[in-house]
Length: 596
Ligand code: GTP
Ligand code: SPV
Ligand code: MN
Image (cartoon, rainbow, N blue to C red; front, side, top):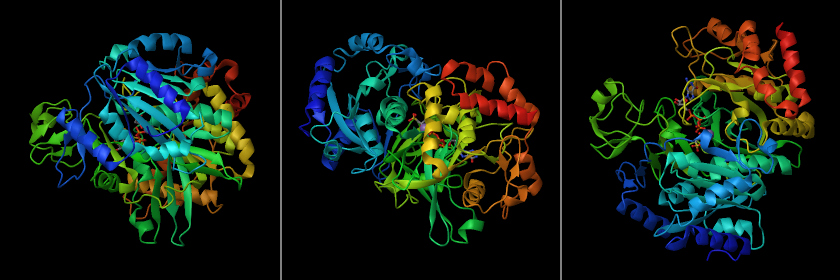
């Protein structure tokens, strides 16, 4: 036994009595134990070793074909009252959901091993960290959790012998039956139940389930925030580092922005970019009154397709050792991995993500994808060449700016700044983005995704906006400035106009200059915009006129975005009834007046 904590022991006993595993194994976090589990997963065919000379410690895994992304329609917030889940979440009462799930879990691990994974979200020893315990029948889950969180004995030490403040996570693969798949959250019971899936976001319960859905609820009650945000630091040539958090929806560029390589104009002056986190931020007011952030995770569960030496070399290097690849393609010539746009040469002797041997170039030429669009790498943060020296700092880092952004072919300009925190909360609340392959369902459809939290807010989104407003009150003049960006505007042929990736730093530099009161702005109906000439385009292939175009605000399409039937802001707000903070309504009316 790894702990004397009676609350943990009692709960694990209860789970074992329910699931009836042949044995229970506690994950202590030791190399010996983990290595034995890797070998076992290889011996059963669950995982595969990749080329150990080229990719030391790296492994490969394929999920079931019907189990490749988060499933929002199978994800539930089970609060006692329906209105506490709100109009953007699926709801069932805790009683009804337990009634469905308990029989499904009964004996589900017969003949199998139940692994007990203690883990800390956040650095060991940080007051901002929280402990979870996940029980699972999947070695793949154990090995991924080991990369993504701080697992083992140290997590129980963080919890202590008496505390009952840990999040309980029960996961069973069962039959991977998508009709019986449930990702259920019980915020009032600190509990998560996942069944019939083996895909990352559905089963690595420390991540979206705990660190966003449960943690957002805890944050509301305890006065802090859990957000779908990257955290990065920009160090100037004098050695001072300023930190930015950015919330973009799934597969909209957080990992890429967090690890960006400064363009030559800034690199030659000595600017550096440091990654603190690429997906989740926990934010708290510090003793100095400012907002401080930690990354609760310990690794990156990143989108593989699109990652290459040009777009994101830091991510690519991060995956060169100790990484688990899921649903990418195999290059059988040398037992390495491949995915779309890794390079221009799909392997001739390839295995596509579903497991069929194919001729890569022919397969791709016929319009097929070798890797699943939501194929992912699970890589240790410590591998990242630009990992921040503050990554493990229990205090976290102070935040100067918060940036919202989505994928919008039209409407949203390259960048604008909110007038103040309240307006910034409004800007976050009206975010919209085209859907991506990170969740099952149609791709490329514009939907409202407030603060990039639509699939991740564990309580009523109206109350969540009120919590943002309350945090702003508390922070007062120490609050970070709030911005909105869009890297994804397209021209008439559908090509991205803005180069994106490393060049996004040019926009971040204007943002930081605004935070320091060193840059001018133009007031527009939607907020403050840069003067086009204040976005540094030295070394870029585009003109100030293009920047002007990227910054243009088309009042008619903004008005349409507000009033459009079905997907407009007013229709969206109407869903919240009296849970919509009066301030949000006021902000919307003010925007309409400015646009008129
Ligand atoms: P999750 O892990 O799902 O939360 O996603 P994420 O926000 O970390 O997304 P990620 O950085 O992995 O980006 C996903 C996709 O967006 C990839 O296909 C990238 O190539 C693309 N992308 C990222 N940044 C840019 C950019 O600046 N411009 C353009 N055009 N595409 C980008
Ligand atoms: C996302 O979908 O936003 C992810 C991947 O970061 S998952 O962990 O699957 O949610
Ligand atoms: Mn994410």
